[in-house]
Amino acid sequence: MTTEPATAEAGGVRATVQTSDGWAITSAILTVTDASGRQVGRAMADGDGVVSTGRLAPGTYTAILTAAGYTPSARTAIVTASGSAELGTLRLSRLPGSDLPATGRWTIDPAHTSIVVAARHMGLTTVSGRFTTFSGRIQIADPVERSSVTAVIEADSIDTANKMRDDHLRSADFLAVDQFPTITYSGVGIVPRGPDQWTLSGDLTIKDVTKPVSLELTYLGLRVDPWGNTRLGLKATGELRRGDFSITYHQVLAAGIDAVGTTLRVEMDIQAVHGDQLPSLEG
Image: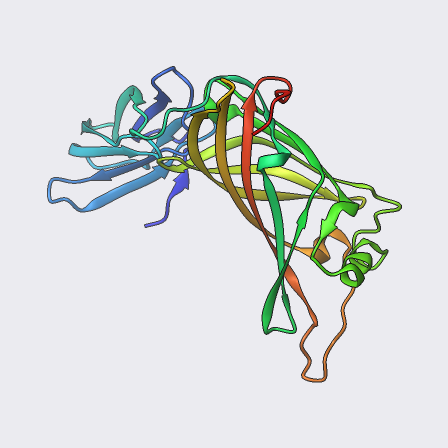
């Protein structure tokens, strides 16, 4: 049985799902089973956290609410002759995990952050490069699902440990850095996938093209450095097609294989410091 977004249709089991702070959990799933344990309804919450199944036969059912990163909750739903049961507002508690970072501005620390991009070469091996000059900010919101990220990368800082290849990547065939000196990313809103696992939705701009690119985040926790600064750690991964950003250079080999892969994988190890700027002392 497929999962459908909630609708305004009358009938069925209906609930409003929120965090313990009263914010809508848009990723919540409502599953309804009958007395024998058979699934008879399943639906996904809408943007307001409202979730509703289709009309059901009168009787007693079990309603189970789940959302990635939250403790599941089960309720008894008594469907009346109208074919409906209203559960009201239900609040889910976040699953135990790492302490979430404090709200406010966090500044990405380039000295302890890496941005690596990898592509297949001749269909045989993976060639990786990294960007060495960049800056960024993370805004932790309350609730954390409304957090945002901005980053600016200097396109000509690409480094694959091969000057000839790097010069080619900087040329009009690829990044055209003389005309488009920066690569930008702006992400707003994260959806939990599990304890310390999130998906960030955002827009990536390369050259003069902006496309949606999602990043899978793993939150690595908090640490206090020797100078008393609080730092957070994140692992971020994503994939994109270079053709989507007008990077269409290709050299086809005799076997019909593109010398440079069309799909790029991005991996970032991110460390950010709480505050509007980096501390003057670095370790």
